[in-house]
Image 1: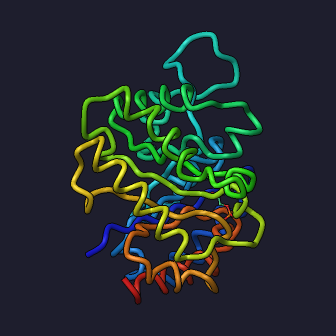
Image 2 (image 1 turned 120 degrees about the vertical axis):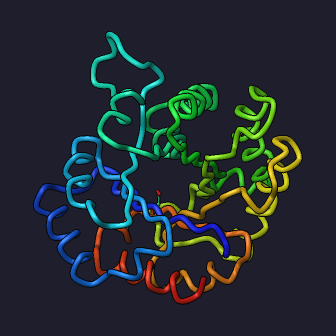
Length: 254
Ligand code: PGA
C-alpha cells in the first residue's frame, strides 16, 4: 500500500472551544477511517497540549508548525525541539513558505532545524516549492533542488528516512487555485528521483505530500497520481466536516 500522510496545518487559527468541537465531531463520526492512514494535527504551539488531550485513543498525532534552531537559553518567544518532545509532539513542519517569506527564514536556517529535529528523533515535514515568478521563469526545479540540497549536502546518506517532504507551490497556498494534479505528479517524481540519487534512499520509501488549496472537491484527481503520498492542508483542515470527508475519500481510493 502507498505511504500516505495527511497533515492539518491550522496556522494561526483555533481556540479551546474550536478544538473541543472539532474532536467531538471526529470522535462521533470517524472510527475506522482514522485507523488506516497517518493523520497529524498541527495547531498553534499554545494549543498542542489541548489537542494532545483530545486525541487520546484516536489514531492521530500532534505536529508543531515551527521550532527554534536552539535547544535552550536566552531566546525570547521561541520553542525548542526538546520542549516539543517533552509534551509528546512527533512531527514538526519546517520551511513553510509563510515562514520563509514572512519571517525571513532561508535554506540554511531550515537545514539547521531539520538536523536538530532528526537528532532528537522527531520527524521533520520539510516544505519546498516555487513562487509564481519562479514558475513563470521556468525555475521551479532549480528552486526545489536548492531547497533539498541545503540538507543533502550536509549529510552522507538516508537523511530523508523518517522525514516527510511537502511540495507546496507558493502560488497555490490559500488561493483556492490548487495546482494541476499532473503537474504535481511530475514535480513529485522529480523530488523523489533527486533524493534517490543523492540520498540513496529506496524511492518507494520517500514520502512527498502535496499542499496548496486542497479540499474535498479536488482531492480525487490528486489521489490518482502515484507519487502523491499525502496532503498538507490549511484552510480545509479547520472544518472537521471537510477534514473528515478528505480522510474518507482518501480511505476509499487508497
Ligand atoms: P491551504 O494551505 O490548504 O489553505 O492552501 C496549505 C498550507 O499552507 O500548508
